[in-house]
Image (tube, rainbow, N blue to C red; front, side):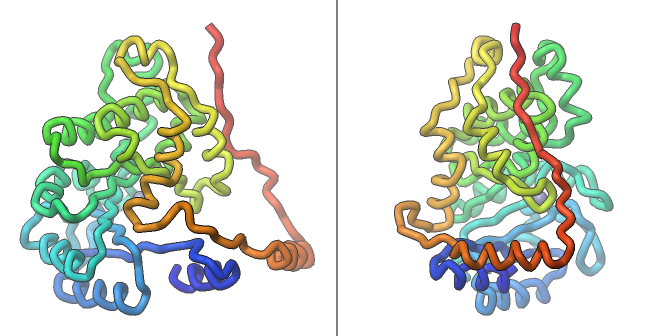
Length: 296
Ligand SMILES: [Zn+2]
């Protein structure tokens, strides 16, 4: 990742890319050394942690509020001046331990480390399988969306806990193409509990392909009227979308959005394209994503 960042930034003679490092606090002292190396040598901008994966010695999942296991990691991060702690929450990964993907451990950790930002990847959205059935009657049977509602309640219980952020990677993409109603409900909940300045854009484009369709889908997405009536959600505004799409992350990562940056030179992209064609290009031609508009 660091090499890719260097290549892209060098090609554009501008800062176009920043990267995360990895933390696995169950590895103990070895991981603290590894954190120092990533900060000094790779100049990473944040950490990503997978609380539900049983790694380390002995292999076990971890909670970010575990004083013995995780607080040395958070203290070192603070010392190293890396303020952003990104945790995979929701979307339980295969081979992991289900309950450790729940965001409950953030409440105490965020309170104990008010100077660090806790960025909840995937907004703790559990799964389409658990949430889709609820959207069929527009959440009349239950308005709870597994783990997103729990995350929002953490914030609502703690009005001062302004250092928790909800990230949309994979979550927005899979909701907007399967159920705009569920997508609206999740966005509405997050925006009501966290505010438009605490929801971060993410696409998980490594799994979902080029992120452009997701960007366009958010730009076009409107809050369903029935959700505004029933839950009191606000309409999605252009200003709010601009915050979500980049201004919030820019603030967290200390990036000046008004700075002039160079594009990657087009002649470089043309060369790559030509080389790709020479190697018997085999494009998938798959179109990712659409927006379903339901007429009443
Ligand atoms: Zn993740």
